[in-house]
Every structure is written in C-alpha cells, then in structure tokens.
Image 1 (cartoon, rainbow, N blue to C red):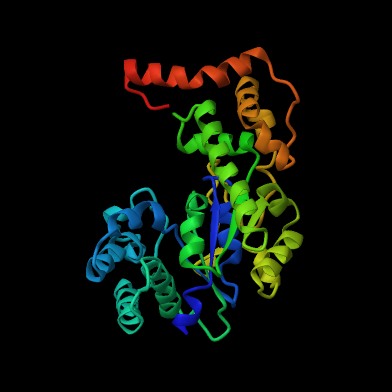
Image 2 (image 1 turned 180 degrees about the horizontal axis):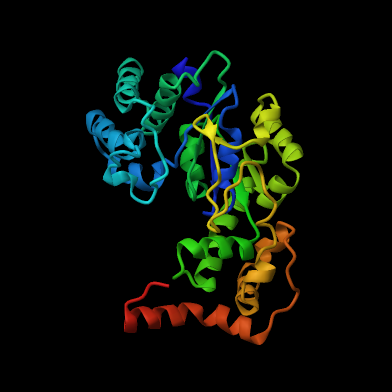
Length: 329
C-alpha cells in the first residue's frame, strides 16, 4: 500500500493565518485521507538538516523534527511543545510511529528525501488506524510550502497543492497578534511574495495541480467550496467536512483573537474595517494592489502620497533602523 500512496500527497500552502489550519481541520477525518495533525515544516526545517545525510541520520532527524509531536502531552510537556501547551498527543505512541516508519523504509528504501515525509505521515495513519483500504491521499500543511513547489512536483509528480489566500488587511490584523513587530510594510512584502509564488505556481503547473482558494469563499460558502475541493482531489464529498477536527478530535480553531469555533465562522472576514488603522490599510493596499486585484479583493485605484511614501521608502527605513537600533522589522 505504501508504494502507491507515498506518491499521492496534497500540500496545503499559503501565508500564516490565511486559513491553512482551518482547511486542514476540515479535511481531517475524511475516510479517504490521512491528514497530518501538525505542520511538519519539512522543507524549511527538516530538509536543510537532512541534506547529504545517510538514511540512519535522516531517520534520527525525522524523530526530532517530524514525529516529535507524538511526545507532546499535558502532564509532562517536552521542550518541543513550547508554544503549543494545548496540543496533546499522548494517546498516540511515539514509539509505534517511529517503529512503523523505520519498518516501512527498511522494506521500501527511500528514492529521495521526500519519502521520509511520506513514511512519517503514512506511519501516523497506520498507528492511529486512519489508514485503510479506502485511503487515497495523504495531506500535509505548512505555511510557505508554495516556495518549494518545484521540489514537490519533482519528487511527487502526482502531487496536488491547495494554496489558501486571505485579504491581506485581515491577514495582517490577525498575524500581528502573533508578531506585533511586523510592520504593515514588512507584512505586505511577505504576503505579496507568498501570494505571487502561488499565482506563478498555478501558471506553471496548471490549475489541475495547483489550486488557489480564497479564505473568504471557504468560510462564507463552505459546502460549495469543499465540494469543489473534493472534486479537485478526486475524493467523495462528505457532509462531515464542514466540521473541523484535528487528529480525529474536535478542533476549536487557532484564532489570534481568543475565539473558539466549534464550526466555521465568518466573523473574521472584514474585521480590518473596524480594527486596522486606515493608514496601515492604505500602505498594505499600495504594496499588494496587483495581487489583490487578481484575486478580486477590493482595492483603490489610486493611493495617497503618504501611503506611497511609506511603501517606497520602507526598505531604506528598515535598513536604517536595523543599523541604528538592531531591529529587524
């Protein structure tokens, strides 16, 4: 079963706080999917360390950076759980996932480093009984996966990507709760880079392999959008998809506004109109206008001189601040 399924991933891509966790939670529990419950950060964290390493070293790195989450528990949280005190995987045996992964790769030696990730997700599915004869696809979600699309389609030619985008004004409002030092200019540049990578990937690999999905459409018309997502993934639509879960358990969301959601909520849409400083919204619009217009986000045709000044002088101001104060943003 592993030789067939290892080449059928779906990678969820997109900027942080753009709805990627929500989509993963909605797909979790689908009988034809095995959905990894946490971000593996495979390309940005594991892969640089595994470069030129032998198989045994890669397996040890996988224990430290890919399947370490199965040591997380509430009673004696390890250091790797820092920042995620609510995540508890004590019902899942780390040793069982580790041994299954090692057994798989001893029987089916990896053809490339990506097979380590395939084996980690497959082993999780096997140990938790989420893997079955009906399983067709495994799913992994990490922000910024979009920047590794060439590697994805080289290693997994049958792969599909789903890229979540969100109105950058709402996206910034949410993300600055986590990173208050991210100036609107810095955020806008990062959002543009992520979003343009998605648009370029769609043009390069085609809409059959790279789907761009707006967060606003997902939360405002969930059944319609999820039906189209199921069609894109070639899996059956299930009514339960509209209820988010994580590793088979109810998921309450990861809102930066301390809100719990037992179901999909539209309350985050347009929140920027009441809570974002108009001058900050102006500079985000000035910097992200081309991508916003392609994605049908309302954006002014012209921008104030103040917004343009902030947008165009930001790189110089950032360099000046970094040299004089040691800041990064």
